[in-house]
Image (cartoon, rainbow, N blue to C red; front, top):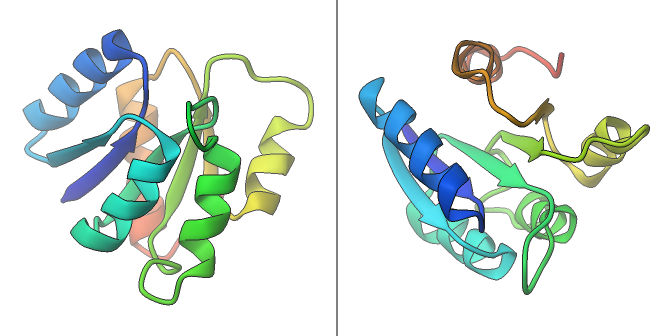
Length: 124
């Protein structure tokens, strides 16, 4: 599976990319929202993991742009955030995310969310 991980924190990238690759997945990294939108169109990943606090273009707007484009609107997006506030899950879903998870990432839980989305499931 090809996963686009949109994240600006190098430590988070190092840890999650390593864990996903160990599971046999291809991981493409974007370090800001603009690159995330561009790579979504270019790479056509199976799923996007979207940090919400990003430089240049935040994850909320990057998600809106990806979901507005015909060529990328079908790609499931899971919002990721370290600073979950009341209402963030609902706001992420309203922006177009298909699911929401908090950091630090529990890899088993994240992989289950990805599997559910790719098999036609809905946000949990």
